Length: 235
Image (cartoon, rainbow, N blue to C red; front, side, top):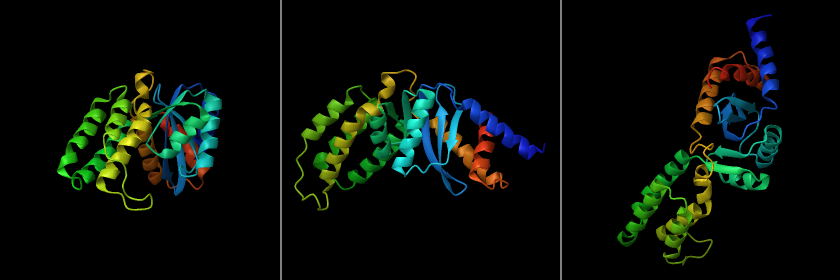
């Protein structure tokens, strides 16, 4: 058997062995690999690959079907993901725990606050500092602090379809953080849940690198089998 065929056969075997592995906490993330939408699931207990599947992260129904199958096959109790709204909806539907990667949260909030800092009246600059402090300290009940902060700001004065003022943008941002807060601190309630999704993102980075190097992959199935073999050396 050629080296190529051996890798493909070994990949098929490994995918079968991983099929019913029990995993409590899984990291999930999507990427474009070989011109196709691919989802990666990683066992965050030991950092090993659980599955690579041809699923477009933007296709909510396909993503739901994939996550539902993963939950049923692997007895998953919680996932760690980025801050896309779709994951919040689907984890609620599937009744599984959800930790949003702190790296993603801090990155987008920092960017949003920086933009508002240049637009807001000086009288409200202190609110930005309070939001930064809460996100930095991550108190368990930060949602309550944020809700009180939200209530202290003036209500919206522009029509729903109108352009929001900088203060209204800040108010909406604080409300979003308050509503999603328990997803940002789920790791407090379960020591098995990491607060970032770094392991999954590292795996995706390596898969992309491999896809660029392995030009012999003609099909997605071949790519997935080959990547499954390679990932065993990355855990």
